[in-house]
Image (tube, rainbow, N blue to C red; front, side):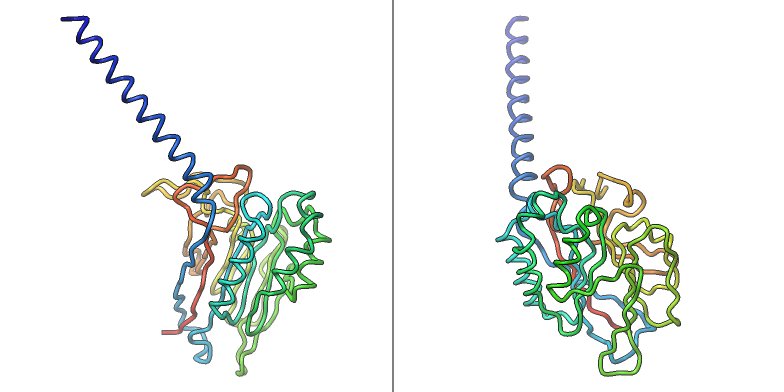
Length: 274
């Protein structure tokens, strides 16, 4: 009788182990081969009463952290560009980390340049420098320059859209820089690392990348993988000193080619003052 109970327990343990291994295997396949491909578009309404009436409905597309050559390849990049163009943005912003391997840069510089050039914004295309971009800065700047992007490297651009009141786009790429004072215009600040929000003041909206949303997300907990520059701010939205901080979950992967419960994404912001 005892032997029979032991055999039943052993059989149950084997069955439990089988299902556990199968679950882990399915989770691995999902995180590695399914959740890293394709992307979603997050449509976000941003309401700020200080926005001039003429900018109601103004559209900004924000994408970030492609890390081309790891899980993003030519077909993925083509789909990203096609989708962004379908959104018909007024302004496009890229918050850094185009590649993460010098050898991949050298092989794909012209390819990426071709697709970045196809991105269409009614007014402007802006980009800032990510931590990986610094490793191949000459190539990165060449790609941006030849695809009609304006690099905001600790400077700003006033964007006028048929009115006398501009939107001030600021790009901060250096951890040593303090906030740029630009006469209290409605200001959108671009950061790569969201933790650098401590260097920003008097900005209405802050757009950042870098965190990849934690890459691995746990339901009800959010992203769990933190890194330098995204230790304090890792998820999609924060209100920091009355400044709205939006963080792109990015499109690629970093260090390991997995995303779990965290689909690659593009953000579409529509601005309103009511």
